[in-house]
Length: 116
Image (cartoon, rainbow, N blue to C red; front, side, top):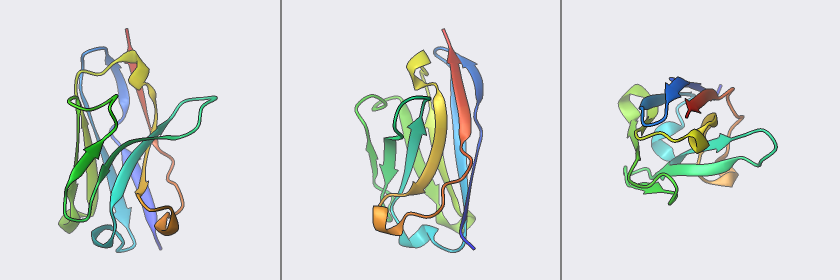
């Protein structure tokens, strides 16, 4: 059974750092580009970063230079290192496959709150 479990969120002051982890079960990780998304109340879920099967990272402009996405297929984990956090980074962070056609049920996400 495919399952995504996000962890590592928390409360941090502006300028601080957090590392999020996404544990992927169900033997899908190595076959898929993966992505991190975030959602705030009242807004649609938005893409934050993507990492291809071969490990090439791609970032949205609003996190470029501050966030680093990585993957460890052997450990079934995708990570998001977040530095220089801003209050506008606050949200519920999720991981999932990149392609909509391969999308699996969403996990519960992990909450990131950045105080000013």
